[in-house]
Length: 266
Ligand code: ADP
Ligand code: MG
Image (cartoon, rainbow, N blue to C red; front, side, top):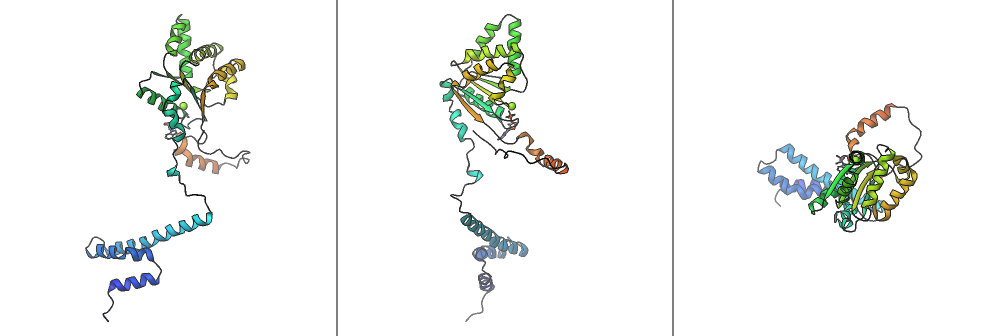
């Protein structure tokens, strides 16, 4: 019987140690070591690495089985844009429906509103973007110059209008009236996408008039897609560690009464 080769000895040892991952990788690692592709230390690291990789994979499988998960789903599999893809078909513009993005600062309301405007422009639609504050200023200027009806006609024309940042600044009474006029004209005539950091229940305060806000919301919601975005500010994500350290340095606040809302979505 011929003396066992080094390869045979290693096979026996790996089998004895119950290292099937390493056993399977052995031939390839030896070949690369023999050809000088791997130094001795690298070959050892590769061999042990193969063992660890298979062991971890098996551990995970066992943990998954014992967790009795209904199915294995990961974040990478989740299509966050799915909910919004139907909007991106732009059929809401054909139907002259509105879209309202609601949520705290930094969660992507402007980003998503602008993405709809880009898609609409690519589809050959006329698009107009303004923050509410700028829009009101332009209407007030037009009114003072005696050109309000001309300005309103111009603003009714775009088949998609984005009105961003409702709720950051309260409006003057005239401002609110002008905005109401514009929205009444666009109602059932062309689509408007609005973003707000305030829930509809607070719009009375924003517009300085509960009755007008209610009438506005009534028209707006008649044909409307509401996208509620919850969660943490994307802008603040780099500062989260800092915020965490600052919070740790402070005396503990009382426990929150509500559970923390989860990231995303309508
Ligand atoms: P909001 O209008 O809700 O205050 P923005 O749309 O301005 O928030 O988002 C803040 C910044 O973070 C923007 O630069 C935006 O492009 C980015 N952002 C927000 N959410 C996401 C996200 N989910 N993926 C990629 N970028 C995002
Ligand atoms: Mg914004």
